[in-house]
Length: 123
Image (cartoon, rainbow, N blue to C red; front, side, top):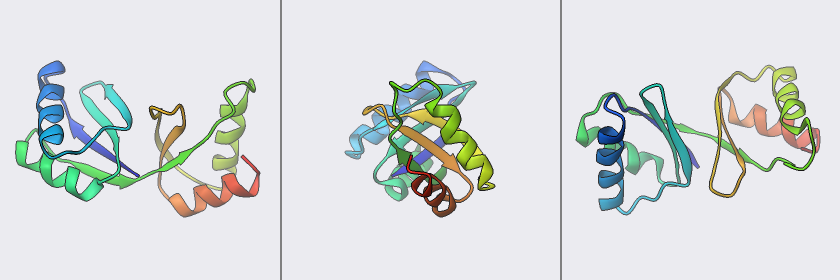
């Protein structure tokens, strides 16, 4: 899975353009949102989404592989324990949000190291 990051300076108008362009290309959004004028969305087709969004010229588009993991939402402190494992492994977290299946989407500097840190600890 991939996170696409694109400026959305005009809020709803920008998201309308992003949604129309991706929808016309048959690319579905699996999670994400808008924060402080920057949109982040989870997609399966990262390269294609990047191409489509570059065509509408809202600004630079970043496409990054992400780690999508389950989190025991019924266990208080689960997110803290997960983040402690990442920090302990030296992973830099650039962002975190949830997908439509309530899994955590982690934008990290090293997906392989992050995955290993979480698997080793039995996340």
